[in-house]
Image (tube, rainbow, N blue to C red; front, side):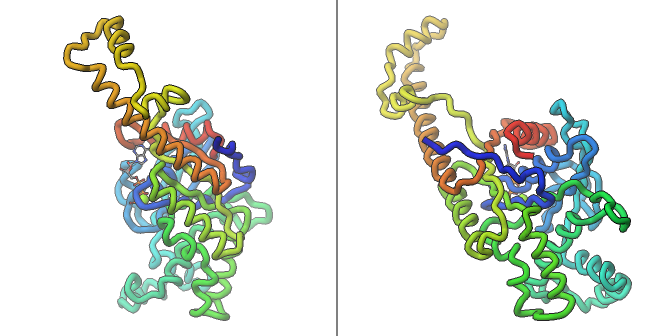
Length: 345
Ligand SMILES: Nc1ncnc2c1ncn2[C@@H]1O[C@H](COP(=O)(O)OP(=O)(O)OP(=O)(O)O)[C@@H](O)[C@H]1O
Ligand SMILES: [Mg+2]
């Protein structure tokens, strides 16, 4: 028996949700659905993309996102339709994040722009990867902490920030910002910035969710990713939930499942059933159906095995269905509603 998954008790206090997972398992889709689900009435949620691929713009069917926070959708309403708060999106890239950083801390945006124009900073190729990651994660933590005004007790600008993060193989190093820049900067402003960012990422306000499908490789990467996070940061960065994506419904269970997989289902009984339903079995339909049932049963058993593997991580499991016609805006809302129903968001 799978241990019963527990709900993430600190879901409510989280301000930064980081979404990772093996490539192609649905990180961008799930991050977007999560943002829709979190943006209930009156709430503003920021969805951040960090890999420069414009996946969010494509998903929400809008032009490529500039380096600016843009409203892309209305969140999920209380009745499960889109009448909630607002989802904003931002595609962060290191160069824009550096300009922000110079502006925020030194009032140096113009200098930064001049440097960029002069081509002094050919970012992607010259900047140390640790520093580039720090600038991007720094932008996400800044948005998560931002207040509407500098007045004491002013409310947060965003209720929550959801980050469509790099894949599992890189997530530990990506989030372990202070360690990654420690060789570059032992003291000084970059060190201070890294420490501030690390404080947010290592606080209970940040959790890292893992998206996976019920297949061997993504499941293994999820377990490795959770292990690596714990190892690298001694538990300081918290794994959140495991989101099982594109799960196919199981149409068989118990004795039927065992019978289907061992091929001991009664084919004559099936043929009689077909006949009773007015379907002719001239062409060996019953036998074909038996083969399909057997394949389905084998898949169900494999999926159950992967689910049991995932349960060993002792994190809450949230399961999202395969959306039949592919993901469009309606499909996203459907996934957002499923997340909300399952207690995620
Ligand atoms: N629940 C779902 N039902 C149906 N299709 C899905 C679902 N989730 C994701 N997809 C589809 O799977 C594909 C991969 O999804 P997505 O781009 O979100 O993955 P990703 O992990 O962000 O990929 P990458 O590693 O390339 O960034 C897309 O075509 C998406 O539409
Ligand atoms: Mg993606």
